[in-house]
Figure 1 (spheres, rainbow, N blue to C red):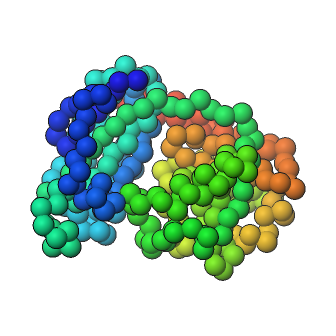
Figure 2 (cartoon, rainbow, N blue to C red):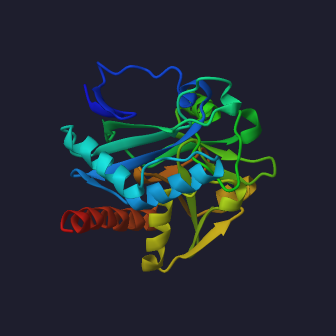
Length: 283
């Protein structure tokens, strides 16, 4: 599909796009990104994504000369310039073009927006595998930032696929589960909804937050917790979440569940997504 993308101030199709080889984001992985969902051509929680983006940019000292409102207009224009009804926008902000030693560079930030359709929802529950973080080049930041450096995550994804798994889940040197390669993970035990603590360097996903906000509808107590890898088989249910997939029940070898509560949470999350579309459309 030949989409129209925003390439640092210029609208270009995939086939005509040029690669900014002197941009620090492409040279050094120096930047951040957000993946923003849209359904029926309406953005889902763009403000939450941009709040996280600007917080991360402050941490790594990149100044973007655009406001959240200006960026939202560009995101919406990207949708309008394409025929995709429901999909994902990838917003990438870099330190900008490098014209000298990168550690001395103080130029203008670069910004890029690409678009693609939503992938078909896989048949669930999906299989996950658990990997030690020390096996991969992964750096945990606290507070977490959505860095362009995903090398360790992608290596783990490839290893998981070789094992027939949909997603890998990491645990740290202390044996605490952190997050998936590109998603968050939740567990349900009795009436508690457990998810790894952000104090472990876990990225506070936007969809993660949406799920936590509706948990009380099912009388679940939400806990930002330290979850030991040794405790996973004691869990009643489990699921993963992300902007792209929403909520997917999951399992691992030697463990199974009926996913009763996860199915109810998924149904309520779908309603929330539809509500946000309607609310923004009628503003």
